[in-house]
Image 1 (cartoon, rainbow, N blue to C red):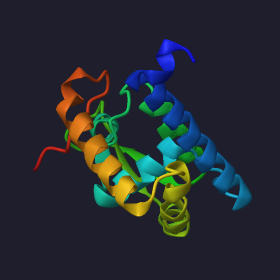
Image 2 (cartoon, rainbow, N blue to C red):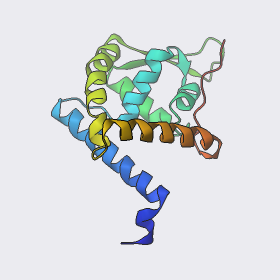
Image 3 (cartoon, rainbow, N blue to C red):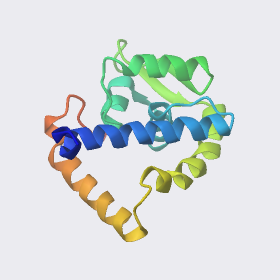
Image 4 (cartoon, rainbow, N blue to C red):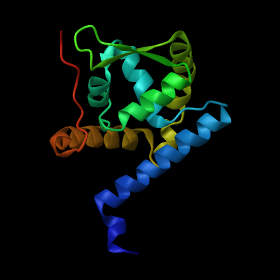
Length: 155
């Protein structure tokens, strides 16, 4: 066994690979063309309609430079609309379409159902404990991220 197999960064990367693989396979089985970051985007837009792309990136802790491509693909699928902000002509305001809302309602239960498959090998108590630890460490390390989680500003 390599030393890296006991390193947090390596294990987190591997768990992320597993998570993306499970998500991708389940969406394929359901006949749905959606990626994990697209799901996160739709979820964030449901909770925070009419945010700009930069705010959206902060809400889902995604890189501001590459969120545009995600938004482009979702707009191309007819799942969201983009419009010029009334307050800042450079900003684009995002809102889910009816098709986006319907897809999110269809997908959300599927995503909830396969979370256990991502944490395969753990019982319910271990999953809950791991989730507590993951939240604790990601919150503590948020400022170290290249794309930190940033809740939208009130107003």
